[in-house]
Image (tube, rainbow, N blue to C red; front, side, top):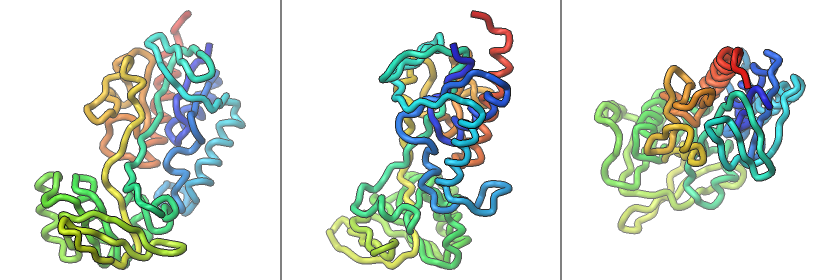
Length: 300
């Protein structure tokens, strides 16, 4: 019997483990792939309080080692099912806990174009607020048509010298307030009815090729591309113990509580207004602290 099982070894999950171990709780972290979550792909993290600059890999590795040193048990197994009695089934076995913290994060949707993975951190980003500051007075493009894409373009317009906003349709799906604000931005150029079909460059992204609905193509020389076509949460297997939105995010009440007793959700996996490294570790610490408090007098 574990005090807590944490599903996911990203910043939210590992922060939960850190707080639980510091409270001398027996902790198991289950991770399907590798520790670190999305942050591990960030070239530089410069918006985390108290750390001027650090690579995402180093940040994640430092946190992982810190948790391991505190004595958390970490197993690389794929979770298949979580039951309301906090029995967790993986591809290798079953485990039981007093509390479960779901911290599986979300996956950025990609363009699925050749060289995309090669240019991540070398001209391609999925987070304008994370990486926008690297493009001061440079030319960037944003790809997408929803609120996030327009918010990113507005944010970047105050940093970059030029912003191309590329959308595959002839109109945006964003709220009118963002559309009105975009119209007032002199350095934002809208490119509609167009798709990115090629990413060009040798060691870093240097230009993109776009194609319109009439099959006309042109190259845009840019320094950075921000992909804002949505995220996919990894929560379907938890549907029996949590409520999900139509997009698959976990619905929580009072910060990180789910509809099931002693089952919590932290980080990008849950409904929230801001998905950042700082909010992930905040969720992780809140979930762990609540779990410690709420399982204190629980008997089995």
